[in-house]
Length: 92
Image (tube, rainbow, N blue to C red):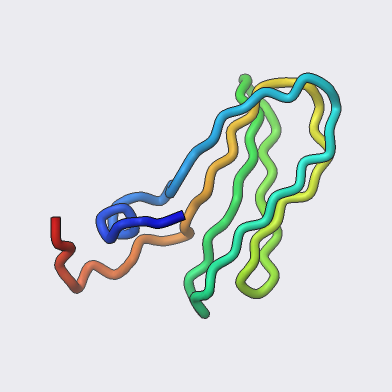
């Protein structure tokens, strides 16, 4: 995934994927970064009222979700826990 400076400075959610699961399934996804202190995280949410949300487990530079999910519509978000410092200007 390639991101521009504006996204990193102003958006907590870096990307979002919506999908449907037709039968109970094992869902596993990992995402990592080469940065030492800035991590990205995964959040898997059921797209219904009062649905469950799963947050990835952080181990060093890798964030992983590993769960069994039932049938339904889901949203996977790739997030950053905080916005980048804005002490520089992003070129358009």
